[in-house]
Image 1 (cartoon, rainbow, N blue to C red):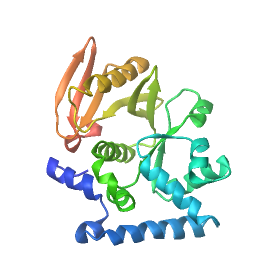
Image 2: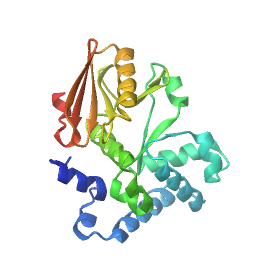
Image 3: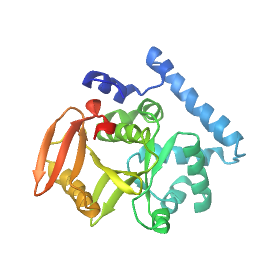
Image 4: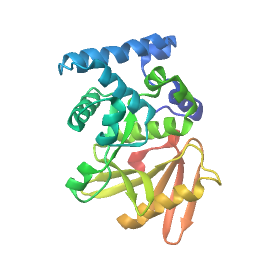
Length: 241
C-alpha cells in the first residue's frame, strides 16, 4: 500500500500494474484483460460462449462492492443455468480478476447460499473496462481496502444482520480479529450509518473495538463501552491493530 495521501490517490486512480503506470497507455490494460479472458479462461476451460463470459465480467465490473447471486446474474448475462454462472464466476476468481467476499455466518451451508460481494483486482484495470468507474470514488476506495485486507488474510467476510452491514470481518484462529468499515470520507450524512453497521457487528461478536478506514481522517469515537477508531488507509498497519 502506498505511503502518504498523494501516493494513495494516484494508486486509487491508476491501479498498480507497472507497465501501465509507466506509460499511461490504456491499451496495455485492455490487452491484459483480453489475454486473461482468452488464455487463462476460455482456452483453459474450453468455454464455447465467449460473449456470455464477457457479459458476466461486465456485470461484475458494474456491481463492484455490491451483493450478487447466480440466479439474478443468470438472466442479466443471458446464461441458461445458474450452475454455469457459478462456474464462470469461479473461473474469473481463479484468474485473479475478481474476488467474491462471503457473508459471515456460523453455518457453512448458510454461507454458501447467501449472496457474495464482488471486488475487482485492480482499479486501473477496472477503469479500462468501464471508464465511468472513475467517478465512483467510494467504490474505488472500498476496493482498495478489500485487497489490502486480502493480502493479509484468507479469512475475510462481510457482516449483514439486523438490517445493518459491516464491510469487512477479518477472522483468525476461529474468532473475529478486526471489524472494519471502508468509508472514503466520513461526514454528517453518512456517519450515523457507518457507525451503526460497525457497532452492530461489534455487539454481535462481543468485542470492544471497531475500525473505520478513511482516506485521510483520524478520530476516536467512544460509544458506551465500545470504541471506534477512525484511521487513514495510507497509515494503516493491520499488524499493529
